[in-house]
Amino acid sequence: MAKLVSLAEGVADLVRDGDVVALEGFTHLIPFAAGHEIIRQGRRDLTLVRMTPDIIYDQLIGAGCARRLVFSWGGNPGVGSLHRFRDAVQNAWPAPLELEEHSHAGMANRYVAGASGLPFAVLRGYTGTDLPRHTTNIRTIACPFTGEVLTAVPALRPDVTVVHAQRADRTGNVQMWGITGVQKEAVLAARRSLVTVEEVVDELVPVPGQVVLPGWAVTAVAEVPDGAHPSYAHGYSVRDNDFYVAWDAISRDRDTFQDWLRRQVLTSEAMV
Image 1 (tube, rainbow, N blue to C red):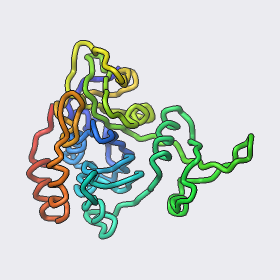
Image 2 (cartoon, helix red, strand yellow):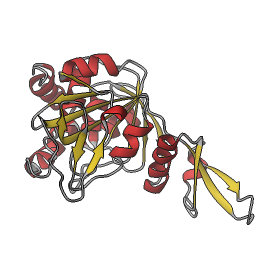
Image 3 (tube, rainbow, N blue to C red):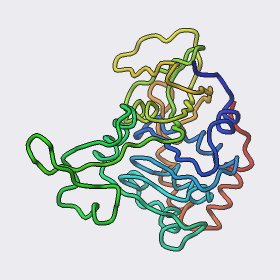
């Protein structure tokens, strides 16, 4: 069963230098607080996996945590580029960043294969793109029944997946609802998992459209109110659109970014 821990304890126990780490959440329930704790604890040489790396991965990359990025789209939603991501790719600052790019469908199917215990996923996809020329983890395969040429991609099995959710009970069962992406699949595919939640409750009251991760599938749960800010948690908080706009100017300049990092992340205490 999942352990109830503090955020600092969860990251210290589960996230290690050199790990393959997935922080998932689509538009909403993005685990920002956990990402900041990874930065505070100085993790290095991480392979960061995320379907849509946005501001939290810009921060992790700029803080020097990442060696490699596996993704299917990257940007500041509704605003523009990720400037720390761009600086790492173009100028190797603060460290070189290797890239492995896929389609959304390819990434989602890779998580599903990992969660299913399969070695790879098969799909119709990538056709007409140049991704196979640049990504060695995209191969063609012939259907043994029809001969149709399909695309195969290897399963994703992160060392640790981190997600945010609305609630957990005291035995570690996790409940989320609203816009959900591949959090369930990413947790089930991972060797270890940390879920931050808005609150820990005595009983999970059913909610329409909910996703429930059973305690046996989760390694640890940390209560972190507002742990998704500046993204949002449906029913608990709203998206801080002003921060997404402000991030463009903060992240463009290395000194401005480093000053923000010192003031807002490195000198802040971990939430418990």
